[in-house]
Image 1 (cartoon, rainbow, N blue to C red):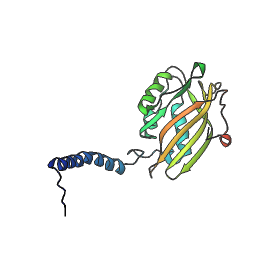
Image 2: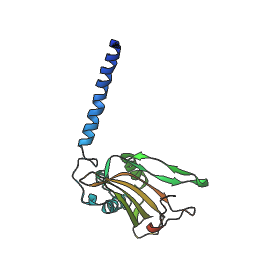
Image 3: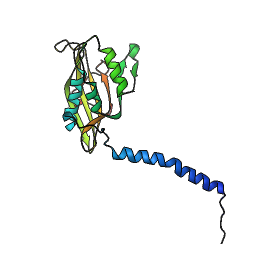
Image 4: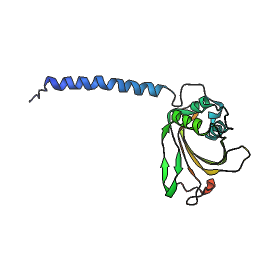
Length: 192
């Protein structure tokens, strides 16, 4: 019988790998023991995908110089949620700017500090499987609550239910333009 002898250096590397892996495993265990939607008390709107999305519209809408409940917006999002504002530029250039929620909140404070912004949902389509849901939500925006529609489009929300509530993992949107006009939910082509 032949016995292979391993150098001491092999065992030292093995021990080092075990020590380095322990903090990552501990972090995974901590993350797994905390609700994915956060540790704050559930918001009443987080009881279903439909009511959660409607609450988001209520929070971001308001007159110029109005006070918005940004803390509530944060509570309706999972820690680490990603928001991706998009824009159609000159020459058909499409731009997207993924950002964490606090950065998105600061962007909104700057953009709408001197002008109103009212976003209203015009249709909603929820696709749900287990603890995840996707919500297609058609919207219209106005500068004044009773003003003329300035933009239309479709928001895309990815939601998660951690067993206690629904929360937003990510959100993005695209605006109604001649190349791809806004459609009603029954005609949304999810393959395009």
